[in-house]
Figure 1 (cartoon, rainbow, N blue to C red):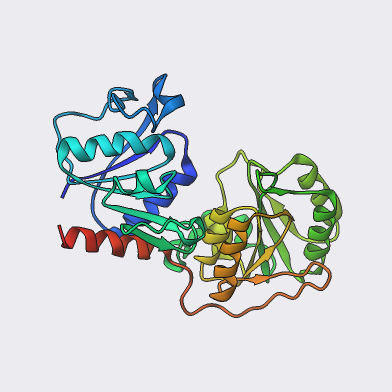
Figure 2 (cartoon, rainbow, N blue to C red):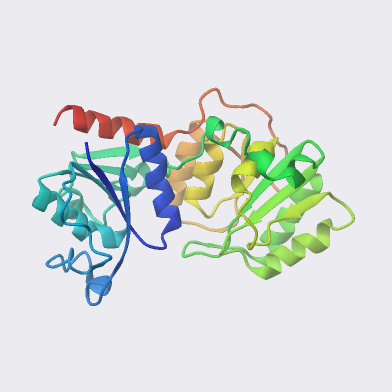
Length: 314
């Protein structure tokens, strides 16, 4: 069984979704990161002709693949072309724009909130990812400065401005109120979308009052280590991926809702709260629960099971 993972270069979040599924699948694979030449990089996947020739680097022509796993908009057309060329099975992780493109694949793994209901779609709650209690176990050993912080430890995953959300000044003040209510140390990792003003406001509020650590964005990312070290995880509401990763950790999770709204996110929150994977935190009266789920969110396992079923029926 020869497997090819096809992901556009630079899409680390998308790539991690696929890696989480492949790690659960437990089969060896070739990993092909690509860039796409003009005009395909602007028009793909609607310009499908010649898409394989538009990839840099090219996919080696001397190897046959039985299964293509792809993710990211620009991977749609070349994955479909490879499926036809090699008579392979093709799986797409995420929603491939619309139902028409979805039906060109043998299997699509898409979140329920995207409402893709084609006959070849397996729905998951959020985003498949690499995190699980077993995966993060021991990762704190790589960051002794975190493991040395006072217990209980609060791991905070900060997002920021997006198409649907905005980190306003009152959101920042509400977050500070929540952090001040935590009776222990605080470990914070901002995202690329977190504005400097948010980080500086948090620093100014906590200095001399709390033991805290804020990742500088330059040193190795402590995400896995902080999740391992954490007694509780607090994540902002603007990212399906960050919430999914938090809920996959096996740690108690609270979601802090920042300004913004979309129907798609509301459907996602409903699934998370109904499943008991996290609690919504009220900044006016923050109460952190300490119950650990017997079965954390595991979208990667659901996706891997669907792929195994596809291969078994081939």
